[in-house]
Structures are given as structure tokens and as C-alpha cells.
Amino acid sequence: MKTPLIVLITGANKGIGLETARQLGQKDMFIFLGSRDFNRGRAAADKLMAQKIECEAVELDVTNPKTIRAAAGIISKRFGRLDILVNNAAIVLDDQKKKPSDQTLEMWRKTFETNFFGLIGVTQSFLPLLLKSKAGRIVNLSSGLASATIHTDPKGGLPKNIAAYSVSKTAVNAWTILLAAELKDTPIKVNAGDPGWVKTDLGGPDAPLEVEDGAKTSVYLATLDKDGPSGGFFKTNQPIPW
Ligand code: NAP
Image 1 (cartoon, rainbow, N blue to C red):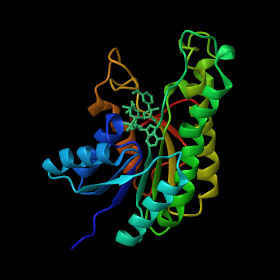
Image 2 (cartoon, rainbow, N blue to C red; image 1 turned 90 degrees about the vertical axis):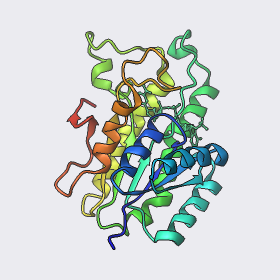
Image 3 (cartoon, rainbow, N blue to C red; image 1 turned 180 degrees about the vertical axis):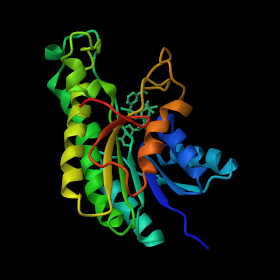
């Protein structure tokens, strides 16, 4: 019997992460649903299992190294490898009524702790397991708001009042480039993805995209074949400007 691909998605108890789990699970992969609240993760896993998706909740707070190490221990013991890591968890804390320079330093630090340092910590802990895969894939959820090119285009139209979140995602993009370069002689591919503006708790009710479409970029980057790109920034299956 063929063993399924093993996937870990952070922040998978709701939103784009949960939908990515559903879509990858439909491709006969085994999904670990990372959730900072184990009960929320288990409720999400129950929903997916009712749809015949093979999955399991695992406690994983990207700001808590203990839970990251414990999750890596669980996956290592069960499967001895990880095929796909989707770094999906993120937060927005910006006070959008304030200018970027008026946002508190504490808020900037908290945002980076989850969106940037959390993502690096998770990646470092799971890299040994990804290196045991025949074709490891790392998907870093970024945002259109990360694009320095579009921010500096006078016609770009990007909001400038979600600064800490936007800059944390620009940092994720830069990290993606450097990690892809480091891993270029391994089978691992590392890419950043913009899901688009999606109706979730983070995206809000006015977003034009439903989660089914919002998960497409992550699914595309998670399932790249050996000739696929590494070190790029994509929306659905198209490269977008850094
Ligand atoms: P969401 O519905 O708010 O879900 C975010 C997920 O991240 C939740 O499961 C949340 O857990 C989890 N999370 C937050 N902090 C965490 C931590 N410290 N450790 C572990 N998990 C944590 O957001 P979403 O819209 O699905 O966003 C998913 C990804 O897409 C994010 O990286 C976001 O930046 C990106 N994105 C979204 C949009 C959009 O329009 N929605 C646009 C561009 C990029 P709790 O349930 O416990 O809070």
C-alpha cells in the first residue's frame, strides 16, 4: 500500500488553514492540523474526519517552542518524516486608525513574534523531518500587502495602515528567498504565497474571495512537482512581484 504524504498546517483550526487541510486531505494526504488551542483543533479534525479526510489535531502555538518541539516529536514518532509544511498561522494587531509611525512598538513585536519568528521557529524544528522526505515542500503564507513593488507603485492601491502585519509578511518573503537558496541542492522547495483577500476572521466579511478559492495558492505550492519553482512569490499559480 502506498503511504500517504504527511502534511502539517499551522493555524489549521479555521479559515484558509482549515480549508487547505480539507483540499489536501481530498488528495489522500494525512493532515496534522496544528492549533494553538487543542480543543479547537480537535473540533476541526472531527469536521474533516466526517468528510472522510485522514487527519489529526496537534497542539502547536507558533510562539511556544515547547509545543513546536512536542509536535515535531509526535510526527517523527508516527511517520519519521514530513512531506509538506504549510506555515499558515498569522495575526493582524495593527490599529488601522493610526499611522504606521504611531503604532506601538509592543504591537510590532507581538506581530513579528507570531508572523515571522514563529514561522522561522516552526521551520527550523521541522526541517530535519522535511529533509527525510523524497520531495519536501514548504509553503509560507504571505500577503499581497507584503509587496514592496506594489507598495511603491503610486497606482498600486495597497492600504498603508496595516503596517506591522504588512512588514512582517515582507520579512517572510525575504526569509523564503534565503531559505530556498540554502536548500537549492535538496529536494525541498520553499515558496511564499498570497491567498488573495479572503472572507475569514482575519480578512473580514467584505473580502471578495471565499475560503475555497483562498486555499488554492497554498494547495498549488504544496503540490508542486519536481520541476516546479522554488524561492518564488505566487498568487494561485502565477508569480507576483516581491
Ligand atoms: P484566520 O481565519 O484568522 O486564521 C488564522 C489561524 O492562525 C487561526 O487558526 C489562529 O488560531 C491561528 N493562529 C494565530 N496565532 C497563532 C499562534 N500563535 N500559533 C498557532 N496558530 C495561531 O486567518 P486566515 O485569513 O485564514 O489567514 C491564514 C493565512 O493567510 C495567514 O497567514 C494570513 O496572513 C494569510 N492571508 C490571509 C488573507 C485574507 O484575506 N484572509 C490575505 C492575505 C494573507 P486561533 O483560532 O486560535 O486564533
